[in-house]
Length: 118
Image (cartoon, rainbow, N blue to C red):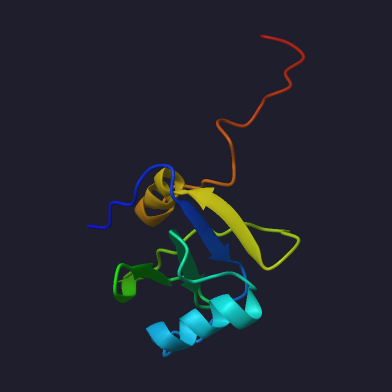
């Protein structure tokens, strides 16, 4: 199981990526496409168009690490909708929730606007 620190920065790339890409190519996307430093203490998450796969790349002491998760059946990762920019920043705790299947983009229960009780 992946257990990132709760306060680590996680950058979610909202544009789908070809899942055949490996760590070095994803690191190039981080540097050239997202304009971020892959050597900083952060995680960079990528998904395919169907949102049933996630790859996370990060630098750890002396090498690139690549983490991969593929969902089976009809399950999908819940990615943000209507986002401006190429990335969304979340915390390590929110990444754990995303990987577990929760919608981290909706905050809490939906507010109801009722007019009557009966």
